[in-house]
Structures are given as structure tokens and as C-alpha cells.
Image (tube, rainbow, N blue to C red):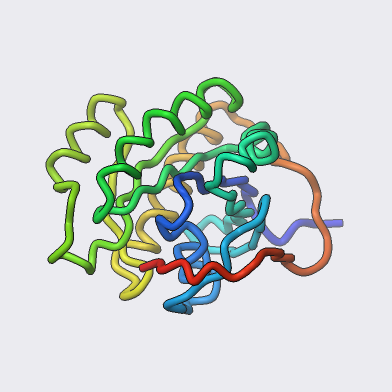
Length: 203
């Protein structure tokens, strides 16, 4: 049975609870936004197929819980990931400081050479900005990874973030001549989300 895509990539969103991972995914997958989003319990996932450089790319995007009690669950989803998107809240210094902790988890559980991207979300809330673009960019440069500031609320750079990751993955996969390698576990059915409402604000 022929496939309807050229590449399939598994991406994982990680970061502290409340930084807006679920809202980024909702914006990218459905072009929608809500002021209050249900806190992710364990993991959630969505698919979106996009065109990049005349290639049809299917993205399987996992949204992981940021709470400490779910770390054991979510760490399992690093395995087999092609790309990891580390998200912090530009209005929260603490969430930025914790990026190092998340990076340590990635290095511990993800495959060596997994692509990484740093994203500072909620860029529309400029009045309460706690982490400057320059500080985050310097940090990302020290790790040799791309960096973008995004806003799930007004859609700023959301598509660019996922497309940046996908473009890098296409380049790497085609360099090694392994464009048919399946990614992650085959999933069927609709996206499932389970959780309890926390009134989490995500931009």
C-alpha cells in the first residue's frame, strides 16, 4: 500500500507546565487558540501533514505533561523521537532556568543526534517579559540549536518553529539516505486527550 507522504517525523514538545505547549500544538494542528487549556495528563498527540521543499511531510507531534509527577511517563516518549522542541515562557524566568533540566532529560533518554529546537512562547506579552531574546539566543547558540520566540495566541512564528524543525530533519534524513525509515509507533484512531481543567493560561 503506497504512502501519502515522503517523510514521517515524530516530534516531542517538552517544558514546564503552563508554558503553552498544548496551545502551540493546537495552533499548529488546528489553527485555533483558547485562553484556558486543559492541562495535559501524561501525553497527547496530533498529526499534521505539510509541504516543505516539494516534499510531503507527516508530523506526529507529542505534547507531554510538564509536571514532575509525570516525568517517568513522558521520558518514554523521547525514545524514537526525531525532534525535540523545548518550550519556555518568556514571562517566566523559572521556566527558562528549567530548560537545562529538560535538556538533561533529553540527553539521557533521547537518541544521540536527535534534533533540538528552543522556543520562547508568549512573546505577545511584552510588558511582562522576563527573559530577553538576546539571553535566550545566546543560550541556544551555545548549544548550537535554533531558537525562535513564538505566540500561540497571535500565531507568531508557530508555523516557522515546526517548519524549521521539519526542514532540518529532511536534510539530515536525506543525507543519510534513509527517507523510508518509519518513526515512532504506528498509531490509529483520533487524537485523545485526557486531563483536568487547571485554567492554565497559554499564549
